[in-house]
Each structure stands twice: as structure tokens, then as C-alpha cells.
Image 1 (tube, helix red, strand yellow):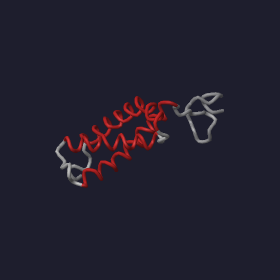
Image 2: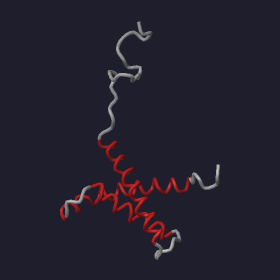
Image 3: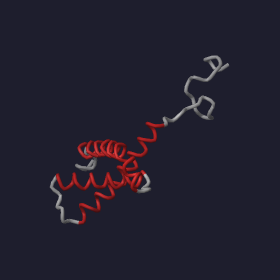
Image 4: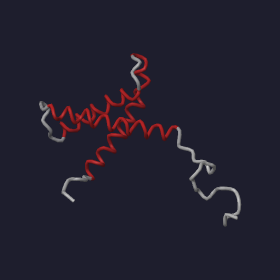
Length: 115
């Protein structure tokens, strides 16, 4: 495997950015809603992009380079989607029913040996 293909430091920083995005959007979305009708996902994307760009500059990327902003915006999209999905799951966890076809949870009524 080539070195740098999977970087645990990058994965950890992405996880921290997802958490920070969730926290910032959750704490400030009500204030933003008073001013504008910006959808939550778009607001999360703006917050995540800003956080990503600031972290890249803090780690030594040149602030005058377009690459810093381009990758920050693209990573912001990924982080916003991850934060939104994590929030959706936290607010309304998925429900598994034993009656769904093909789902075997071991909670189906009847004898355990299937007779």
C-alpha cells in the first residue's frame, strides 16, 4: 500500500471537524434563522468550509493559493453531509423490525429451532 493512502491523522481531523460543525450549527442555527431562510445543510456547508480553510491555513498551507480554498470547499461539502447524517441519526435513530423480509435479528416470534 502506498504511504499516505490512508492517513489516520487526516481521518481524525475530519472527525473533529464533523463534531465542531455539528456543535456550531446546532448552537447558532436559531440565530441564523432569524436573519435568513438559509437551509441547514447549506449553513453547515458554509461553516464546515470555513473551518476546513482555517485549519489548512493554520497547518501551513498558503493563504494566497486557490488550492487551499478549493479543497476547503470540497472537504466542507463532505463534512457537512457527514454532520447532517450524524445529526439525523441522533435525532431519529433507525428502527429495525423483525417483520421486514430478509432481516434476521433473532427476535422473531416462534420456536427457536424454526419449526
